Image (cartoon, rainbow, N blue to C red; front, side, top):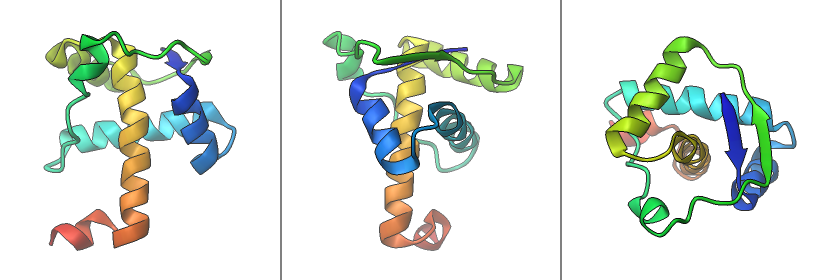
Length: 114
């Protein structure tokens, strides 16, 4: 799967998770797919990114090996929201980073939701 990250997404990953973009993005995608399948679904990808053509110019591009189930789930999510797959991938990164920030401030989500 081709991943294209804009400058802000790359900086956000490196700032929080370090310089191994492949590992960070793969971890974020696993987290996002788990959220999609749970009762704690993430917010939809922001429509303003598509409406205004705000899909970032790629700062980093690389291939990432993902399983067929994960790929199908991510492609379905892109089709459901009528957005490019790469927007879903970038959105997954930001959802993961936001959830990490939330957990840092409030504890694990399960502790907050119960």
